[in-house]
Image 1 (cartoon, rainbow, N blue to C red):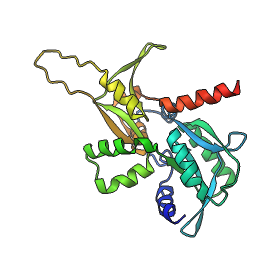
Image 2: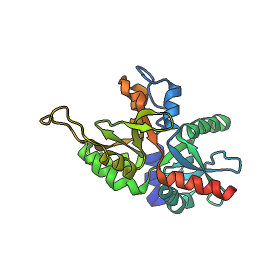
Image 3: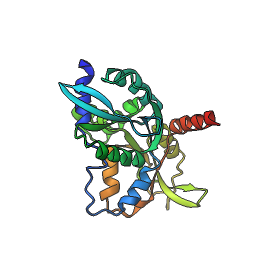
Length: 252
């Protein structure tokens, strides 16, 4: 537990980013923000009834009850192999349940209110497979390299196009600005963009993929006064959809 303890302490000191956001000057209503977070899928250890399960850790001599939200199959694997085996109640039975980020947040709030336990916290487990590309992009975007390890440890990353691009939902025939928690998905969309010039000599900036830490992404949704913030839509990652489809198939 020695190696992981300091990391756990650093992560668990970060309060739920959804609960720390200032609502002033918000273009989107709280309900609209929740709707946008509904397409961000996480996987959390749960009881048989689907209620999130917390695990107890001894962090520097203090007992901590931690709820976990894994953002990918790789994050689930890391959680199972590196984190949960170090918990005080590691032998408890549990299964993983997919939840939207907004649903998970509301369930955790209910559990905390029921237990009245001020020693509980939430840890968001980023996708390990996204760490290298996230670090590369954040460095290019001007982030302080000395602070990056802490940022990447504490924040799953949302990838968005910069400048923005529009995609079309064929079901509703509406356009939106696509973002994703999966870099390859976002890169594929950006690479397909056809640059249109009004004149042949016009300079048009080709879109690039931008990495945004989750807490910053949520803060932007809740505080930005830009009109196009309403057009942002997070596309579920293919790996998360695959797990859900497999689970649904096994139930049939």
